[in-house]
Length: 164
Image (cartoon, rainbow, N blue to C red; front, side, top):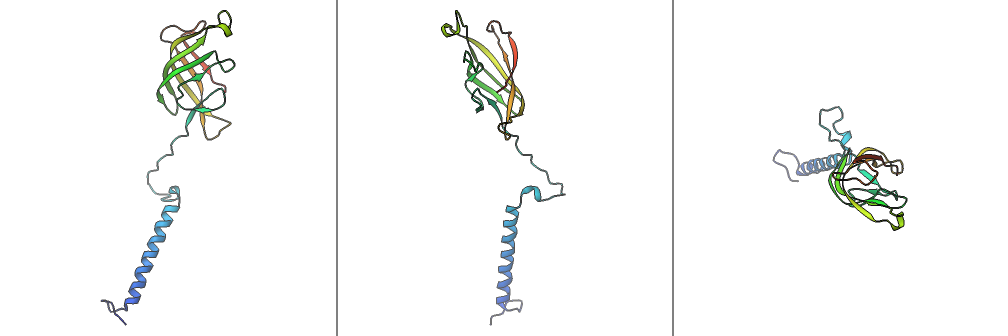
């Protein structure tokens, strides 16, 4: 029988080492599996907030959009659409872009009308829960500001509620 330097049998020493390794492994696996919120309950450890749910723009077809390059304003007939949108910001409360508002002048009637281009600044705001997709929030307001001329009879600064 071999004896360790402390005068104990070597077999007992190896058993303690294996037991210590096993306990450390179990502790490491347990720490990895238990949610972070359960660790340090009652301690002063700083908690990192979860990122906010994404905020989307809902289109005419009830599809979620983020930073779309085009957006139809007149869902019924497509005679008004935002194109060439370049998004400056897309945040939890607002989103801003510049682009072009293409509006059919409907002269002499819409099917024979011509689309006119109006430079526009777009601001999306007022995010709210999207009932069809509870994990998402959607912008509910759109503000259009025309730096030059606005399509007749629209004012140069107008806000609409998005109802889709």
